Length: 244
Image 1: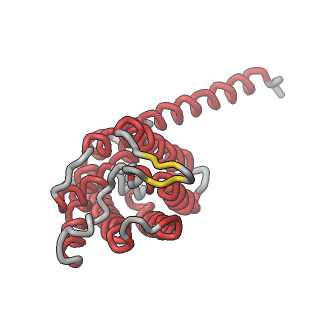
Image 2: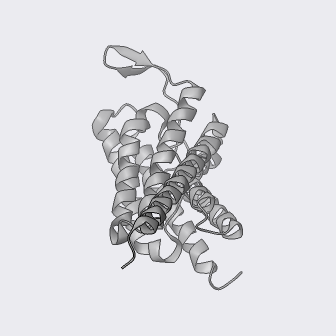
């Protein structure tokens, strides 16, 4: 393993491990039926964890901690395929080990360990909502699109400079406040797979693994297209400018 890639893989492992242990751990401890205050607490547990470790490890690896984010960065042409594969393996390993440690300290998998699930008969106002797999797929893809867009526009494009981790952490928080009651708001294959492996509950696993990747690829396509459009406009404006 190259001395250059090893630190990146290590910090991606640690960051994803922390996301599972703290984020999924908060979901396991707070539990279901907690209403908006509980969902908000879970959302901030995830968002603050990602923000803190992105500040800590962003200069080393970019602070992805999410295979869908890595896919977006790869699709946008900002990293090599081999490096992206290494990131994803490290992220999945960190997620599984984080969930296994969580199961150990909580004395088993009875809490669900924060495994994301689709809502059934969720009370919303004067009605109840059951999220179908198709609707869940759309929600998870859209949430991953939002996160990947912010990562590409801030951390990768460098527009937010040192504040990129703050923007990314807040996006994670807002996504979970909206999507948490509906799908569990994983929008991260590692965040979903870790607790699934630790609990043995693989319900709708295909949805939680595939939908975020789809949303990430769409975000990368849009990001790349907008960047090319801006470059073309700059080039056109330069060509039309009178020579000095």
